[in-house]
Amino acid sequence: MSRERGGAAVRDRDRQSWLRGAPPPLWIRALPVALLIGVCAATLAWGHRLDIGFLLGAIPPLAVLSYGTAGTAVLGGLVLAALTVPVFHLNDPGNTDLLTVCFVAALSVGVSFVRSRRDAQLVTERAVAEAAQRAVLPPLPDRVGAVRCAGLYRAAQRGTLVGGDFFEVREGPHGVRVAMGDVRGHGLAAVATVTALLGAFREAVLDQPDPESVAERLDRRLVVDSADVRHSELFATAVLLDFSPDADTVRIVSCGHPAPVLLRRGTAVALEVPPCVPLGLGLSGVRPPTGLTVRLRPGDRLFLASDGVGEARDGNGVFYPLTERLMRLAGDDGVDGTDGDEGPDGLAERVWADLVRYSPTLDDDVTMLVLRPSPRERH
Image (cartoon, rainbow, N blue to C red; front, side, top):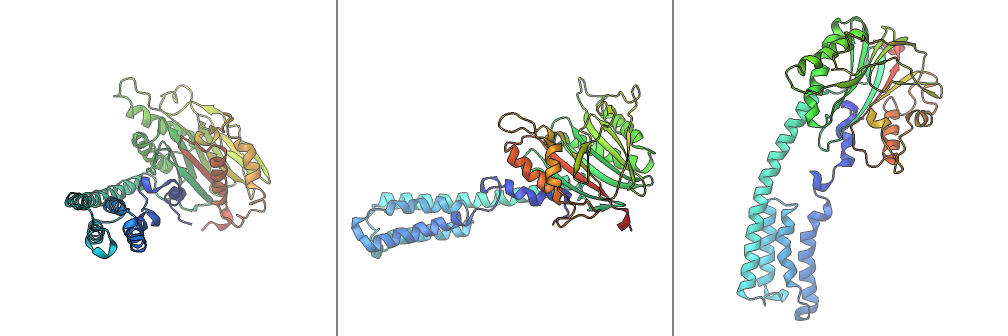
């Protein structure tokens, strides 16, 4: 499986279609040729009794959808040849009809040339945009220090890899640290805030002694960024985790974000982390964030999700029962401290598939992160 951040590019293929940038399907490419062959074969079989030559006029415009300039020109030339060759019995149209087909064929070639140039430019711009977004959220490794991790990220805005959600797993002097958050809004408008928070988190990993201090650093970052903006509503929710060097304990701070779910031997329990205010409100100095320390056992997993998961609804408006579904979807994977056949990515994939079935019309960013302490394999 690809080790991109949550395999976002791979999983995004099921959201693409021909009308959203995917290559045209085979039947679209075959349609102009099949139509030309079919019309010619029918007129050979039935002669003047079958007047369907007008269908040939549709071939050049159809060719524009999937062929380049040369291919469109060739198909246009074949159409004109079929109209003028006596054996096909299509040489009855008058000069006006023939000139009309010539004009449509020439116009189709011109449109195909413009489309090809625009497609090439869009491919270049898309590659640059994806590179920039991957610089914000680089690929997530399957192991960071003593913690195995797997993530899944689905941006709400089609065609983007980064939205209003973010997560990061980094190892520093104080152990492995994790951040997951959700900034106000989603789509490309939220990318600047995501970039600022991730930059602040990556620096805080190196010099802050605990997750409470990291939360204060992130809060200050947003406060500074919004200081010059009148009536700013810049804020973000986040959950921060700080694993001990041997990953037998984890300290958790939640700033307005859903708390992690602890998966342990067939059970799923939402941890009761003391609630703290969201980041960016400047209240960390008034009410400093407080955390919860949890002792971990072999085989334990922590499941983190954005509110796009917990707030997804079915057709009756019922919220997605995350904890209840996790108990079934997790099954007996990892009860003996192993990862099972699917590896660390399996649970996030199963939850995503179940979430899409439960709420087909998701309209928010969806982020999941599965963390499994695994000190025995630490290098």
